[in-house]
Length: 62
Image 1 (spheres, one colour):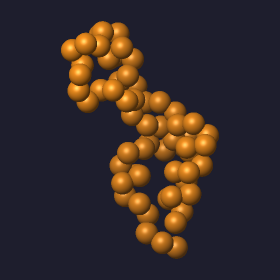
Image 2 (image 1 turned 120 degrees about the horizontal axis):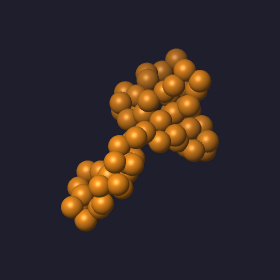
Image 3 (image 1 turned 90 degrees about the vertical axis):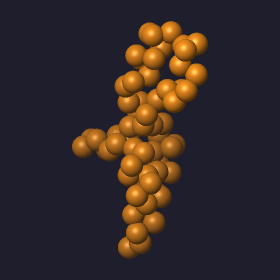
Image 4 (image 1 turned 120 degrees about the vertical axis):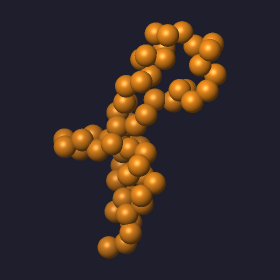
């Protein structure tokens, strides 16, 4: 068994049911032009797609 990639563990949250959650994009800069509604919506975590989840799990196994 190889080392676990710490960068992946820091970027994603893993739920007990096996879902992988990630941060929304577009909240680092250029916020003045975005509405408050958009900014509030993006604060929540988003579930990663099935294809991406599969890739992430493979990277953790290696």
